[in-house]
Amino acid sequence: MTPLLKEPRREEIKDYNGGERRFVYSHAFACDSCGLFTVVAWRGSEYHTEPEYFNNPEWYPQPVSRQDFPDVPENIARAASEAHACLSIGADRAACALARAVVEATAKDKKITVPSLYAKIDALHDGHFISEYLRDAAHQIRLFGNDVAHGDFADPVQRPEAELVVELMGEVLNGVYQSPAKVERLRAAREKPEAAAEG
Image 1 (tube, rainbow, N blue to C red):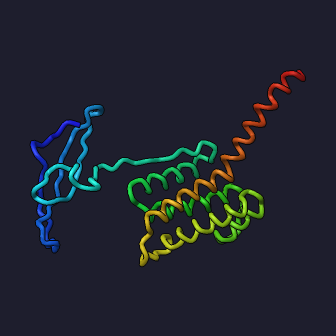
Image 2 (image 1 turned 30 degrees about the horizontal axis):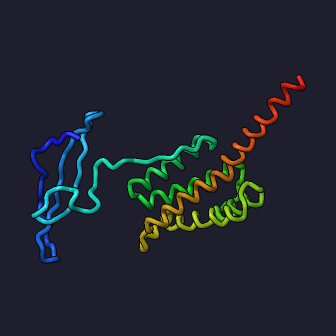
Image 3 (image 1 turned 60 degrees about the horizontal axis):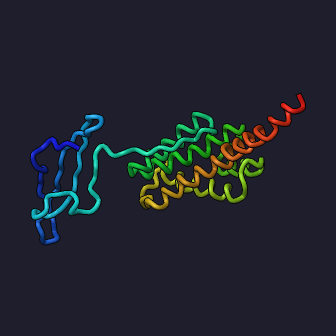
């Protein structure tokens, strides 16, 4: 990283009640590989001006992390990957809402047309697309996503809960799409030599 400023920019935090003077520092850099700009910000006292002295420096733009779902229908896979992207930048409510939408889209993809998501999840289980454990997981995703979708923001979504919601979304997709696809690939690999021998 190449610094673009001679020294970090410093702004005092207004109305700080802890007794010590506190500041927000920021510094701009250019990436040595791609040449694009990035900014780091951190908080501290006037006596230390380097980000390594402080916990949790914040880099902008924030790195975005996605996950691939190669055996999932493209429209559902894109939404699931976007849920991971939301989670990676701290958009926890958005991640939960997307995870809920992914579960509903999965049911629709399996031609389940009952009205409510509650009934759709049960129908996924009754149709042997998901196990009892994954049915319960899908219902938990539904409940967390409902709070966001219906504007119930009184209780914030905690980070560990959002991470679990997105993780369980992945397990639902694994149960419905990815594990069956892996089994089919293994079956095809095992049967291919037999078919060649018979020919």
